[in-house]
Each structure stands twice: as C-alpha cells, then as structure tokens.
Image (cartoon, rainbow, N blue to C red; front, side, top):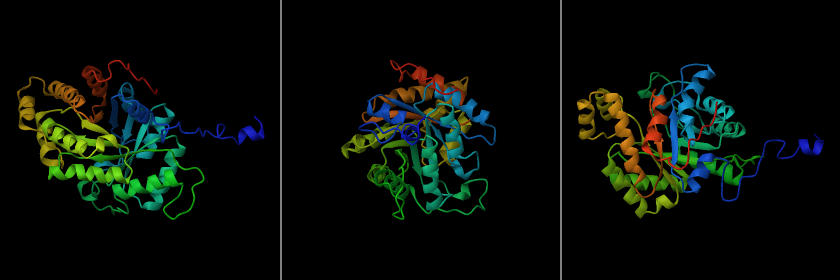
Length: 330
C-alpha cells in the first residue's frame, strides 16, 4: 500500500454516507425504504464473558434490523452499553447504543459518542434515565447533566455541525442515526404527542416506545401524532413484549411507570393452561394489530431474559413476510 493509499478515507475505514442518509445504519436504510422495521432489546449480562452477549444476540439477529444495548436500565449495573455495542459490531450485528444521562456528564458523553462511532456504531437512543433510587445501588451519585432533549441536540450538533458543545471542531464527525424513547401510556395521555414533538424537534429521527398492551390507547396516541405530522418527521417503532405469567403482568402494571396492561389481557393469562405460551400468542397478536395502525414504522421487541422467544414471535407474526430472515452476526 502506498503512503497516499494509507492515508485515504477508504484505507482508514471512512466511507461517505450515501445521499439522503445520515449514517451507515441498516435500520435507517430499512425505515427509509418503507419496509416495516424490527428492533429488539438485548438484556446485558452480569459478566465479562463476550460469549454471554453473543448467545443472547443470536436469536435476535435472525429477525432484528438493529439490537438495542441497554445502558444500566432500571439503574442497575450490568455490562456497559458501549461494550456490548463493540462486541455486537465485531460480530456483524447492527447495534443501537443507548445513552442514559443519569451516570455521565457532558464531557464523558461526548467522548463516548465519538468512541462508539469509531467502533462502527451507527444508531444512538437518547434517554434521560431512571433515578438511582429505583436500582440496587441507591447510594450512587446521579449526574443528569443532560436530559434526553439536550442529549439529542448535543449529538446532532456534533454530527451536523462537526463541533463539541465548547465550539471546538471535531476532525471527523460521528455519522449517527438519532433516536429517542416515548411512552404513550403515561397520563395525561393528551400531552404525550406534544412531548414526542419536542424530541423530534430536538433531533430524534426514530422513536422507540415503551410496551404497548392497550391498542385503543395507542391508536389515540398515533391519531394525534398524525394530526401533528409527526409520523412524517420521524419513524415511530412500537414497543412490545411477551408476558411470562399473570403474576409478572400484575407486577409490571403496578410497579413499572407508564405500563398499562388492560384487565382482559391479565384475565386471559390467568385462564390459560400455559401462561407463558399465552403471553407469546398475545405478543404476536399485538404486533399484527400494531402493524395495521397508520404511521407505525416497526416494532421493538423487549423480552427480558427471554431472547430465545423473539425470533419465533417475529416470524409467526408475519411482519417480515417477503423480506426473508436477516441472519447476521455469529
């Protein structure tokens, strides 16, 4: 290789972003092509063994356009999101790097964003984060230098203007597809689309929602989002997941803010001969119903410690029909 070649963009791994795209993300390509996207959540291990990540990712990679690596969700410590993203990228998966504002200040976050981009990460989900009091180390010091809105604006500034918040130039800006979370099921319900609009104005290009179990409530949210034109400004991906048992369903409804599980679903779980199988069937039915709601661009599957179910759920739902299995990674 000549000295000139060694210094070229291609030799250094830098490839221009295609026209009309902000990243090299497969998720961005799928969404902008009009196809129904599937993302899934990888629950991080309490382990330093990379094989634990690969084993959890394998059933997700068969069907998911991108895999979310959570960032100490619930304020509990696990393998870091950026570490999981590095492993997933190395194995050929497309990760979503979740960033919580709870644990790091703006200096650390901006540095992590550059590091993640250098590792090949193309998707970022910006989160404010749960308070430390809900986790298993309540004595930890919370940071919250940013919230999700300021985090979105910061990463957009880094990407589009090539500058840190200090104004200092970035030699090679990160090429990232920006996302945010939304919860349609937190009252007052009529305010939730307005909150979504703020995140989109701040820079969110895709949205992943919390669990949706109440279809009429979600349909009302989407109707208002369409009235505001939000479905044309960002891709809305609805969160779903299989319930494990009636007890788990009741606990989630009582203890996890913003999760509304209607009584008929819990009753159906209680009456089922095999509640786990019934929870899987309910999830498949919810995906099929969500698929028909105007303005919804995909589903985000969250199966806590049950990643092995995700591939069957997606394939049986039929939302990938005509696309074939994705089959990426190890």
